[in-house]
Length: 116
Length: 113
Figure 1 (cartoon, one colour):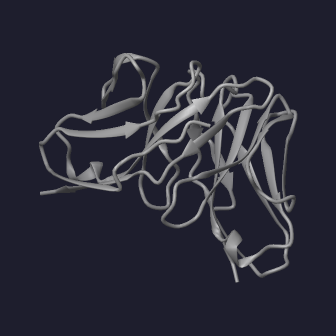
Figure 2 (cartoon, each protein chain N blue to C red):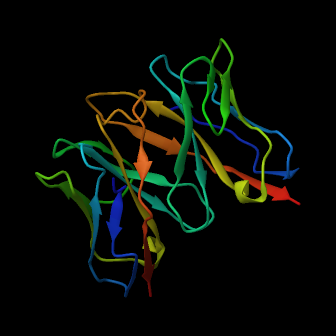
Protein backbone atom coordinates (compact mmCIF):
# COMPACT_ATOMS: atom_id res chain seq x y z
CA UNK A 1 0.00 0.00 0.00
CA UNK A 2 1.19 3.49 -0.77
CA UNK A 3 2.00 5.75 2.13
CA UNK A 4 1.16 9.41 2.42
CA UNK A 5 2.09 11.19 -0.79
CA UNK A 6 2.74 14.87 -1.28
CA UNK A 7 3.28 17.06 -4.32
CA UNK A 8 5.28 18.79 -5.46
CA UNK A 9 8.53 17.65 -3.87
CA UNK A 10 10.18 21.03 -4.19
CA UNK A 11 8.85 24.46 -5.01
CA UNK A 12 10.40 27.87 -5.46
CA UNK A 13 8.25 30.99 -5.23
CA UNK A 14 8.81 34.71 -4.81
CA UNK A 15 7.43 36.95 -2.10
CA UNK A 16 3.79 37.86 -2.54
CA UNK A 17 2.94 34.83 -4.63
CA UNK A 18 0.46 32.12 -3.77
CA UNK A 19 1.18 28.41 -3.41
CA UNK A 20 -0.91 25.23 -3.27
CA UNK A 21 0.47 22.05 -1.78
CA UNK A 22 -1.24 18.71 -2.15
CA UNK A 23 -1.48 15.61 -0.02
CA UNK A 24 -3.02 12.17 -0.46
CA UNK A 25 -3.50 10.18 2.74
CA UNK A 26 -3.04 6.48 3.19
CA UNK A 27 -5.96 4.56 1.73
CA UNK A 28 -8.68 4.27 4.34
CA UNK A 29 -7.45 7.20 6.40
CA UNK A 30 -9.99 9.96 6.86
CA UNK A 31 -7.93 12.59 8.64
CA UNK A 32 -5.16 14.79 7.29
CA UNK A 33 -2.98 17.19 9.25
CA UNK A 34 -0.54 19.80 7.97
CA UNK A 35 2.69 20.87 9.65
CA UNK A 36 5.35 23.45 8.89
CA UNK A 37 8.94 22.62 9.72
CA UNK A 38 11.49 25.38 9.57
CA UNK A 39 15.09 24.25 9.27
CA UNK A 40 16.48 23.17 12.62
CA UNK A 41 13.15 23.12 14.42
CA UNK A 42 10.43 20.60 15.10
CA UNK A 43 7.26 20.52 13.00
CA UNK A 44 4.61 23.05 13.94
CA UNK A 45 0.94 22.12 13.63
CA UNK A 46 -1.07 24.14 11.08
CA UNK A 47 -4.37 22.35 10.44
CA UNK A 48 -6.20 19.11 10.94
CA UNK A 49 -9.11 17.92 8.80
CA UNK A 50 -11.34 14.97 9.49
CA UNK A 51 -14.19 13.91 7.25
CA UNK A 52 -13.74 17.10 5.23
CA UNK A 53 -14.21 19.37 8.22
CA UNK A 54 -11.56 21.45 9.96
CA UNK A 55 -10.99 19.94 13.40
CA UNK A 56 -7.96 21.85 14.57
CA UNK A 57 -5.97 24.96 13.76
CA UNK A 58 -2.57 26.00 14.95
CA UNK A 59 -1.22 29.49 15.51
CA UNK A 60 -0.81 30.52 11.88
CA UNK A 61 -2.09 33.65 10.10
CA UNK A 62 -5.14 33.69 7.86
CA UNK A 63 -2.84 33.57 4.83
CA UNK A 64 -2.78 29.84 5.48
CA UNK A 65 -5.87 27.86 4.51
CA UNK A 66 -6.66 24.28 3.69
CA UNK A 67 -9.41 22.00 2.61
CA UNK A 68 -10.14 18.30 2.37
CA UNK A 69 -11.87 16.71 -0.59
CA UNK A 70 -14.44 13.88 -0.70
CA UNK A 71 -11.65 11.40 -1.47
CA UNK A 72 -9.87 12.63 1.73
CA UNK A 73 -7.00 14.23 -0.14
CA UNK A 74 -6.11 17.72 0.97
CA UNK A 75 -4.69 21.02 -0.20
CA UNK A 76 -2.79 23.59 1.80
CA UNK A 77 -2.88 27.11 0.39
CA UNK A 78 -0.61 29.94 1.41
CA UNK A 79 -1.25 33.46 0.11
CA UNK A 80 1.04 36.49 0.01
CA UNK A 81 4.15 34.44 0.62
CA UNK A 82 6.81 35.80 2.95
CA UNK A 83 10.46 34.83 3.17
CA UNK A 84 9.68 33.26 6.54
CA UNK A 85 7.29 30.80 4.91
CA UNK A 86 10.29 28.91 3.52
CA UNK A 87 10.08 25.52 5.16
CA UNK A 88 9.35 21.83 4.76
CA UNK A 89 5.58 21.36 4.71
CA UNK A 90 4.52 18.00 6.04
CA UNK A 91 1.25 16.20 5.64
CA UNK A 92 0.20 13.40 7.97
CA UNK A 93 -2.76 11.07 7.96
CA UNK A 94 -4.56 9.05 10.59
CA UNK A 95 -7.39 6.61 10.29
CA UNK A 96 -9.73 8.14 12.82
CA UNK A 97 -8.31 11.60 13.41
CA UNK A 98 -7.30 10.75 16.94
CA UNK A 99 -3.55 11.18 16.63
CA UNK A 100 -3.22 12.07 20.27
CA UNK A 101 -5.54 9.40 21.52
CA UNK A 102 -4.09 6.13 20.37
CA UNK A 103 -4.37 6.59 16.62
CA UNK A 104 -1.08 6.46 14.73
CA UNK A 105 -0.12 9.42 12.57
CA UNK A 106 1.86 8.72 9.41
CA UNK A 107 3.82 11.46 7.70
CA UNK A 108 4.52 12.07 4.04
CA UNK A 109 7.94 13.03 2.67
CA UNK A 110 7.08 16.73 2.67
CA UNK A 111 7.21 19.59 0.19
CA UNK A 112 10.24 21.85 0.39
CA UNK A 113 9.08 25.43 -0.23
CA UNK A 114 11.63 28.13 -0.86
CA UNK A 115 10.46 31.74 -0.98
CA UNK A 116 12.87 34.18 -2.62
CA UNK B 1 -1.25 21.57 25.43
CA UNK B 2 1.29 19.44 27.20
CA UNK B 3 4.78 20.76 26.68
CA UNK B 4 7.66 18.33 26.35
CA UNK B 5 11.29 18.72 27.32
CA UNK B 6 14.04 16.53 25.88
CA UNK B 7 17.83 16.72 25.78
CA UNK B 8 19.00 18.68 22.76
CA UNK B 9 21.56 16.09 21.73
CA UNK B 10 23.07 12.74 22.67
CA UNK B 11 26.05 10.76 21.47
CA UNK B 12 26.37 6.99 21.48
CA UNK B 13 28.38 4.20 19.87
CA UNK B 14 27.30 1.36 17.69
CA UNK B 15 25.92 -1.59 19.62
CA UNK B 16 25.03 0.39 22.71
CA UNK B 17 21.59 0.86 24.19
CA UNK B 18 20.33 4.44 24.05
CA UNK B 19 17.77 5.88 26.43
CA UNK B 20 16.17 9.24 25.67
CA UNK B 21 14.02 10.71 28.40
CA UNK B 22 11.23 13.21 27.83
CA UNK B 23 9.52 15.30 30.51
CA UNK B 24 5.84 16.20 30.16
CA UNK B 25 4.74 17.45 33.55
CA UNK B 26 1.29 18.69 32.52
CA UNK B 27 0.20 15.64 30.59
CA UNK B 28 -3.59 15.23 30.58
CA UNK B 29 -5.58 12.13 31.37
CA UNK B 30 -6.45 11.38 27.76
CA UNK B 31 -3.00 12.11 26.32
CA UNK B 32 -0.91 9.41 24.69
CA UNK B 33 2.87 9.64 24.37
CA UNK B 34 4.32 9.12 20.92
CA UNK B 35 7.88 9.06 19.65
CA UNK B 36 8.98 9.83 16.10
CA UNK B 37 12.29 9.55 14.28
CA UNK B 38 13.25 12.03 11.57
CA UNK B 39 16.09 12.01 9.08
CA UNK B 40 17.10 15.24 7.27
CA UNK B 41 14.60 16.42 4.65
CA UNK B 42 12.23 13.52 5.36
CA UNK B 43 8.93 13.29 7.18
CA UNK B 44 8.93 11.98 10.75
CA UNK B 45 8.58 8.22 11.09
CA UNK B 46 6.44 6.71 13.85
CA UNK B 47 8.47 4.66 16.33
CA UNK B 48 6.24 3.82 19.27
CA UNK B 49 3.23 5.02 21.23
CA UNK B 50 2.07 4.34 24.75
CA UNK B 51 -0.25 5.42 27.54
CA UNK B 52 1.24 3.87 30.66
CA UNK B 53 3.73 1.28 31.90
CA UNK B 54 5.83 -0.33 29.20
CA UNK B 55 5.34 -0.80 25.48
CA UNK B 56 7.70 -2.75 23.25
CA UNK B 57 7.79 -3.27 19.51
CA UNK B 58 10.36 -4.56 17.06
CA UNK B 59 12.45 -1.39 17.11
CA UNK B 60 12.10 0.20 20.55
CA UNK B 61 10.68 0.16 24.04
CA UNK B 62 8.81 2.93 25.80
CA UNK B 63 8.84 3.19 29.57
CA UNK B 64 6.21 5.34 31.27
CA UNK B 65 6.16 5.68 35.07
CA UNK B 66 2.94 5.64 37.04
CA UNK B 67 2.67 9.45 37.26
CA UNK B 68 3.15 9.71 33.46
CA UNK B 69 5.08 12.95 33.87
CA UNK B 70 7.98 11.55 31.89
CA UNK B 71 8.75 8.79 29.43
CA UNK B 72 11.88 7.06 28.20
CA UNK B 73 12.49 5.79 24.70
CA UNK B 74 14.91 2.89 24.68
CA UNK B 75 16.72 1.91 21.48
CA UNK B 76 18.55 -1.41 21.83
CA UNK B 77 21.90 -1.88 20.14
CA UNK B 78 21.92 1.25 17.97
CA UNK B 79 23.63 1.37 14.60
CA UNK B 80 24.97 4.25 12.51
CA UNK B 81 21.64 4.40 10.67
CA UNK B 82 19.90 5.36 13.91
CA UNK B 83 21.56 8.77 13.73
CA UNK B 84 18.55 11.06 13.53
CA UNK B 85 16.37 13.48 15.46
CA UNK B 86 13.94 11.89 17.89
CA UNK B 87 10.77 13.69 18.92
CA UNK B 88 8.62 13.06 21.95
CA UNK B 89 5.01 14.14 21.56
CA UNK B 90 2.09 14.29 23.90
CA UNK B 91 -1.26 14.46 22.16
CA UNK B 92 -4.34 16.25 23.38
CA UNK B 93 -7.50 14.39 22.42
CA UNK B 94 -10.40 16.76 21.93
CA UNK B 95 -13.13 15.84 19.51
CA UNK B 96 -14.37 19.41 19.35
CA UNK B 97 -11.09 21.18 18.87
CA UNK B 98 -9.34 18.48 16.95
CA UNK B 99 -5.94 17.10 17.62
CA UNK B 100 -2.94 19.29 18.03
CA UNK B 101 0.27 17.38 18.38
CA UNK B 102 3.02 19.63 19.66
CA UNK B 103 6.53 18.80 18.56
CA UNK B 104 9.36 20.07 20.71
CA UNK B 105 12.88 20.62 19.50
CA UNK B 106 13.70 16.93 19.51
CA UNK B 107 16.87 15.11 20.51
CA UNK B 108 19.66 14.83 17.97
CA UNK B 109 21.18 11.39 18.39
CA UNK B 110 24.61 10.85 16.91
CA UNK B 111 25.78 7.23 16.71
CA UNK B 112 29.50 6.85 16.25
CA UNK B 113 31.41 3.82 14.97
